[in-house]
Length: 222
Image (cartoon, rainbow, N blue to C red):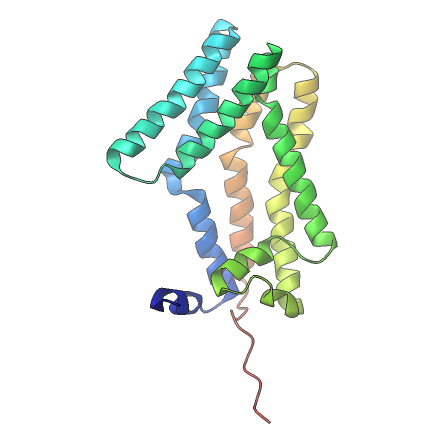
């Protein structure tokens, strides 16, 4: 095991600090937020202007490719651009097969529904998903489950992580069924990173109030 591996868990004194650090990485900063939204904005804006599915898909995908090329030229991580490119690419595949612009948004609705269902199930069975985030920091994926206080904390955080996904489905599914393509695009933007940031801010607020040690106190030797 490398020195970096041995010291990684000690980099954070509390569970709350570790989770805050991991969430900061997940967001990708302001640039990551913009890159995630640009392809949807491009697709929706073009659809509103032209009502042409093919043109809208080309513009949406081209915007993601352009952002990817900038990342490559700057030799910075393309992770968040690739995420948005894969997202709009899958949506384009669905829409191209059906010829219906609203199907660009169907994969996202299905993804959020499945994600919300998975997180709810993890809470019900008392293995909340956020716990595995803690495990990735400590190096032991399941040790956190032995601490009831940690399980309760992770359950609260998983609820907060789940609510944005659930809200997207509740808002977007009726719009999808009613064929409101423009409203779907606007709602996807509004309920995308802004809602995710709000959910993560709530998680940070919960975390800021706690001081749960990364590791339980050592037991005295007999």
